[in-house]
Every structure is written in C-alpha cells, then in structure tokens.
Image 1: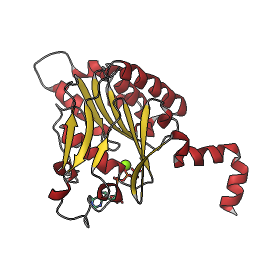
Image 2 (image 1 turned 30 degrees about the vertical axis):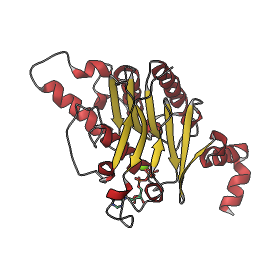
Image 3 (image 1 turned 180 degrees about the vertical axis):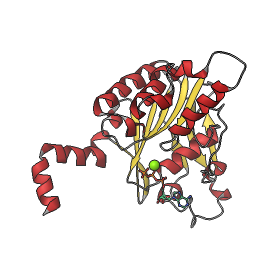
Length: 247
Ligand SMILES: Nc1ncnc2c1ncn2[C@@H]1O[C@H](COP(=O)(O)OP(=O)(O)OP(=O)(O)O)[C@@H](O)[C@H]1O
Ligand SMILES: [Mg+2]
C-alpha cells in the first residue's frame, strides 16, 4: 500500500486578511478549512475560473516547490505567480518522506525545459540532467512527447507529484498511457494531486474527486462529475446535442 506524504491542507482562517479579496474571495477558499488528500490520487475538477490552479499552486508552494514549476531544486522565476494563499496553508505531512517530486504548471513547462538546458550548459558536476528526462531536449520534442518523457523517465516513484491539466498535451490514447504510468508510480508509493478537465484521467479508480463550484467544493463520484455527464451525453448523440445547441 502506498504511503501518503501530504495528508491534508489546513487553511489558517484567522490569519486571512480578507475574504473579499483574491484569492480568499474564491468560493473554494472561502469554504476551506481542511482539504484532505487521498493517499494515492486526488483530483480537483470544476469550471474554468473556479480556483483549481490557485489551490493547486498554494499546496505545491506550501510543500516547497518552486511556484513556477519543476522540482524542489528549480528556483528560477520569470514572473510573480504567487497568490499568497500558500502562506496561510499548513500541510499535515505523514512520517514518510518522498524521494521524488514534481510540480507541473500548465503554463510553465516551457520554463522547466529551458531550465534543464541551462543547467546542463553549466560546467561541472554529474551526468546531464536531460538524461533523466529521456535524453532528448524537451524543446526538441512535441508538447505531448516531452510531457510523456517527463512521466516515463523523470518521475521515479516514491514521489509527490502535483500536476495542473496534464492532459493539455495528450491525445486520448496517450491519456490512457498516462493513467497506466500513474498506476505504476502509485504502485511504488507515489501520491498525485491533479487539476484536470479530462473525463479520461479522472476515471482513475483509486482516487478522490473534489468538484469545485460556487458553493465551495465537495467529493463526488466519477459518474456524477459534470465532465463525465456532459461528455457522455454529447458522445451518445452528437447530432441531437448540436441540434439543440445550434438551434
Ligand atoms: N492574480 C490574480 N488576481 C486576481 N484574480 C485572479 C488572479 N489569478 C487568477 N484570478 C482569478 O481567480 C479565479 C480562479 O483562477 P484559477 O486559475 O485558479 O482557475 P482554474 O479553476 O484553474 O481555471 P481553469 O480551468 O481555466 O484553469 C479566476 O476567476 C481568475 O480570473
Ligand atoms: Mg487552471
């Protein structure tokens, strides 16, 4: 059985300056006291703008990841992307320490790729970092190829992985490949926190799904997510759906 590394994130509500201002004004933060994480996989789902990335980044930075993404060793920064929420979050950790970790921001994979190239250009120690990403510059692979290289080669298990919309790069069949890889990593004591819109990814069975809405967040079953219901209804009968939509 996989060990959890982060059991829950607790918002110190007393220290929040105002629930009228971003990020504390977001319904998901207003309603937050404790967010319990599944020991293996936790999904954050919900409408665009509901606050998934804000919450995910706060957990990632509270954990010690660079807010721009990457491992704990990356400390480049290209713009202020902090919401400040992390300063009011306390993570309850287990006694187990992960050996690996990665924070993938939707927008900043490019920066991670550049940072790896820059580090490898510096003279000195050890084998090139790119070797642990599959050996080919992430800039010379397609978006999806480089993301899968990251999952396959760089993610080593016994890790805490925080991913924002990893499906953005992936075809449906590669999303299935990603689920298979995730399952292997879970099998070697890894924990994932993933924001996603993908009805394929969120089908992973050994997981919790928090659906974020206007009233905060709630745990939902896979089949009850909006993503599953809308996609299913649409694919059942696209012509009828479009008829109504475009009428
Ligand atoms: N720096 C900021 N200042 C003020 N509001 C912000 C800031 N960053 C984000 N927001 C707002 O906070 C809300 C939540 O943004 P967030 O990026 O967390 O949403 P999301 O759930 O990840 O959406 P998506 O599915 O589109 O990625 C949005 O309405 C956004 O406009
Ligand atoms: Mg987002």
